[in-house]
Image (cartoon, rainbow, N blue to C red):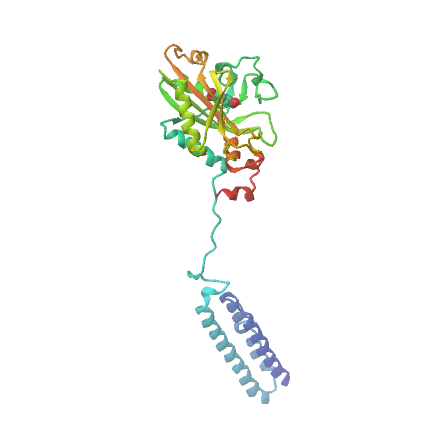
Length: 341
Ligand code: DAH
């Protein structure tokens, strides 16, 4: 039966072809089973079919199948060795420790966290402790105790998120001042970072943003102390070339109060688009703690004095990194965030 003879040759050809495509040990094992498997292996099938061949042809064809079987076994064994030695480089298995690895992408601190951390560090080195309080706050701590009366415009429904008549999402970190003073005796110095909320949303305002509050109370704390502290802080933050200027201002919880400007960090004070050609950037609010506030927390305004300040973290980060849209901080777009590695 030359039919079987042709099949033997055909099997040889397809085997060789298939072997050429094998790239890994798993595929080789699979090929081996397909051809030499005890039950349904292709070679086994040929041997079975041999039984139905006329007797006189059997020896020759039998030898041919055996030669095929041996050839297949040898080829598989050789391929196995080849794959084993080159296994490390094969796609299907093994590890080559000498190959360059795939570096996992590293995470980075969020730019707001970087700035927040920097701000806190500067004050910690001046001996400030870090304090905090709830973001959900009563009217008393967020407003009343800070001298913000019921009819103060800061309470406007348009600015404040009210949870109930008496409970708000804090509109600033100044609430922490009150909690701190209620629980502590002077003297102390504290820095108070945290999230605050206002109904305000545009390119430079976010309904949730971050502030850092500062408070120093003691017996002879003066406006000069405030000035020196802020000047040191701003030079640490923006560089030693930074200049500071104070402008008279008003806050319900400080008297006197000041807006604090820094020389423009973009143009160094010459005037540019960022500082609207003024050479100055408004960076924080500050003042001497109002004696009324001391009275509200049970301190004696006759013996205790202090200063306070507050600044927005997003504003500092936008200036520092030249970011013009505050929403970028909260979009969680990796193309943005990965630049702060
Ligand atoms: N709480 C003020 C605000 O959110 C910022 C501020 C100004 C805080 C002056 C202070 C301060 O402690 O003395 O706009």
